Amino acid sequence: MRRARKPGRPAQVRRVTARINEQIGEGPVHDYEWKRNQALAFLEDGSKVKAIVFFRGREREHPERGRALIDRLEADIGELGKLEGQPVFESRTMTAVFTPR
Image (cartoon, rainbow, N blue to C red):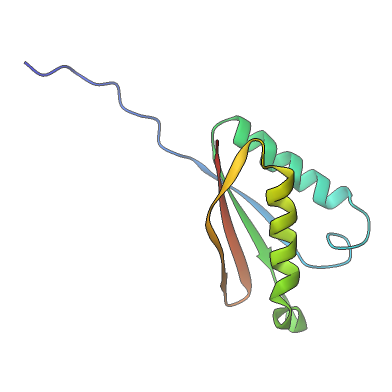
């Protein structure tokens, strides 16, 4: 006779989105801190976090700025989450998925 198993909890993916601009990049840090804190809260709940960086117009010519933003996020949430694979740059977005440790 087979034992009944309790079904596992499916991984929930939460999104944190940002645009490359002065508010996120070099200017006031409140926007970045808010998004980082949201990502930390989602990881503490056991959810995956999908970080999406949007590029508009000429920003598409500088994907290194988006990569720098994702690297900064990875360094800040390193104690609770790890990067799953490499960030993917498609069309106008750069996407990275973080999983809880």
